Length: 142
Image 1: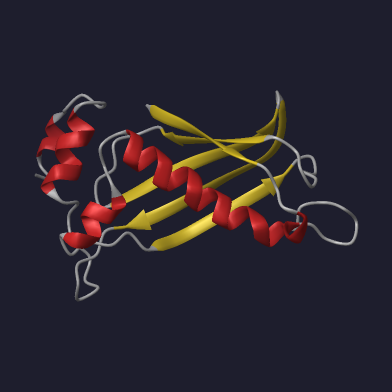
Image 2: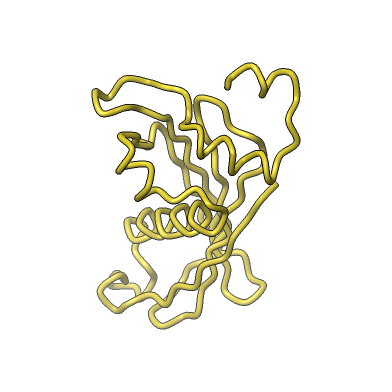
């Protein structure tokens, strides 16, 4: 398992009339968490794109537990629990101090410039090797 943490402070424009952070504001925060985790663990998305790979979102979900408000100091915890193969699932926790405000997930695939599904790039797999032990199943996707 690998994880990362990103800090967010909601802007006034991200709130609704009730003073809560609007639900649509959370999805870009997941992207911030995802990009941070990838970059922190040597899987830079910008480098993937330069090499002709993209990771489109195939599925996402959010569950709200408590509201966030304007100017709250929030932390997005992004977790990659399992070694991905053709798809990558990331889980997220959004917290204010120790209070869990929301949980979520994204599932993404790997595609090439022609938008065809492909295996992850070699440098992505090499970065994963640093964090996840190789098994016979994961060796087969190389």
